Image 1 (cartoon, rainbow, N blue to C red):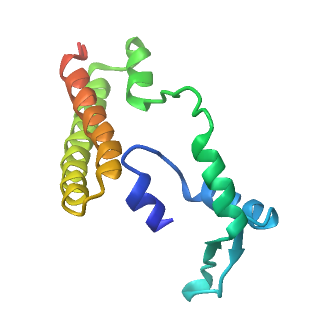
Image 2 (cartoon, helix red, strand yellow):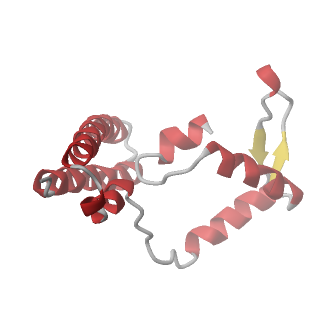
Length: 144
């Protein structure tokens, strides 16, 4: 989970419950195998040869459409049901989050480029643009 979050979290959200729900299913299909139990009953998994082949096939498939799920935009859509202070608090918290996330992702881009990871850097640039767009929208969002 930690490795997946480091690599993917800036542009692909996931929860521990999603990951831990999927791992036994992948193991049942022979795509990952169980490793030796780790500290605090942690259960490591490793990808199998069949898992690598399946992953390679998945990379060539049509990705499908994006899904947009922004909890702040959703709440703003019902702004008439909030007090002005509630909306202002939402806006302030979101602004802080996106400002901090933007700084983190910019650092990740810098590191990826330094390490020659051009594709990773390119995907991370999406996250940079997302956080910039969110900050721009938050600045223009109407709070009465």
